[in-house]
Image (cartoon, rainbow, N blue to C red; front, top):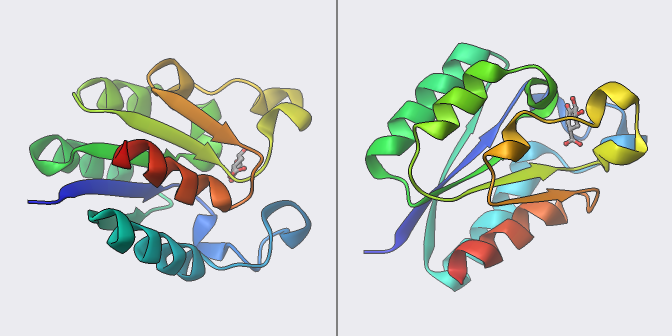
Length: 142
Ligand code: DHK
């Protein structure tokens, strides 16, 4: 059976493509999902996509991932910088986690420089635009 990877996106990423395109680019989240799916098909990986603007909904999805996912690719968005709840949920997940940020959070405001999730993630990809999500799939293929 092929590996199942959960791709989780946090608040405001439903507006990708419309929201501050000078920072986050012009692709929509559906475009990102489509290009990840093309890559995942080549790698024999199955994907489950989920986006929510709600912290608890993301926690619930991480709990679901505990039951069946071989890994998680997560862009927690603003919750990266605030959410102990998402960190705690990821700490209950036993398989690898890759954190993705579209922008380089270290080049931006100081409050974005710290991510709670980074202390749990096997790796962090930041600043490579939406390519970061596709590169995270390569990690899981290896
Ligand atoms: C997305 C967000 O929505 C911000 O809150 C983060 C992240 C950065 C990104 O670059 O993908 O600070």
